[in-house]
Amino acid sequence: MKIGRLSLRLTLGAFFVGHGTQKLFGWFGGHGLEGTGQFFEQLGLRPGRHHAAAAGAAETAGGALMLAGLATPLAASTVTSVMLTAINRVHRKNGPWVSNGGYEYNVVLIAAAAALAEVGPGPLSLDEALGSDLHGPGWALAALLGGVAGAAGAHVYAQRSAPPAAPTVDTAAADEVAAEQPQPVV
Image (spheres, rainbow, N blue to C red):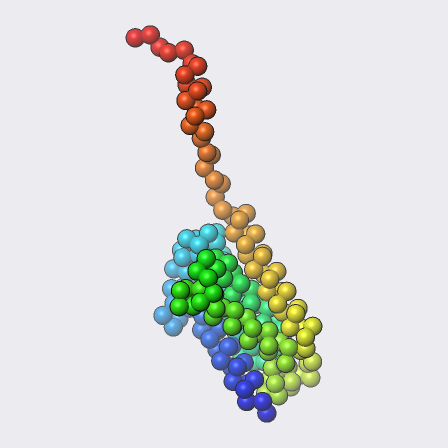
């Protein structure tokens, strides 16, 4: 048995389930859909509640699949998608280091998920019990690309759901037009 791989899979899976259920149900000190949705709105992920539900479901389902060692590349893809969205919307502007609010931790989680997609979930897994052989470099790459596609989809959905921008007024042009208008005689 590969104890390191099992430990990584169980730890990663459990924490993702925890983060997902924080978003969905407010468990483990989370804010639930309402609070998470409001936070996501502030990040520009609109509608916030939809994005909170999608992120919570991806983390919960991806974490559960990882815990069980079932469809490991799919599990890696879903959690990668959420981590890439977090990097894009929250951490990227802070640089790499987590001590500055950066994306270092998110990248480590993505790398761990990709590593599991490449080496497989191990002998104590549902994939192994079912005789599934969904692992290797191609599966790891597919998981990463699936994560990129999911994050891109979240970004596009947020952009399309954003409220229309207020029209900008060229004040110089507006003043010029006003000056050309006949002035009322008083």
